[in-house]
Image 1: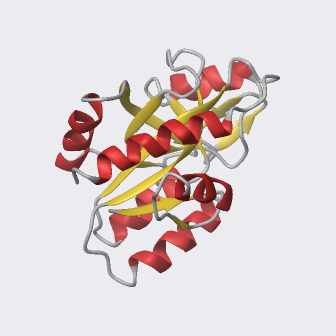
Image 2: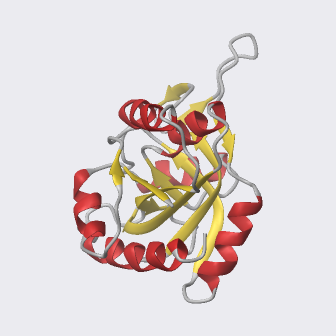
Length: 204
């Protein structure tokens, strides 16, 4: 299993769990470049993008919960009117959706369900973490009831598609967008994520 993570912080804590992640960079641009660089070297094993994420208000997810992405949306691509964001005109098409549905996703979900509570659903990639709960509600609503917000998923999914690589994306909730003033619980989220990845690594 080739494990990709956005930041050295995530990598350090996951290494303590006995995993060997590669850091690709935080945010859509760095993550895309980092992933492409790795993919172009040739990949012969399942690829998992893992990290933390913020749970949207209506997702039902709590701190430490796990989720697998079925599709990644680029939530910040379009026209922004205060909190409400719209798409570009049809004369200016922009790719902002990348499916992650494939047999490996179903297999991974079944394996994880043996030991963990796991949700599967849409994720949204943003350039800036959402601090306004209302914006979180809008982003989730616009993207088919999205579960989790992150900053790398769409770009890595697109890179994987262009390189014809099957990608899984697994995130643990570190913060609730409905509670913007609460401190992020990164270590707790990564501890659970590490356990889930070790379980998954034995079965992929």
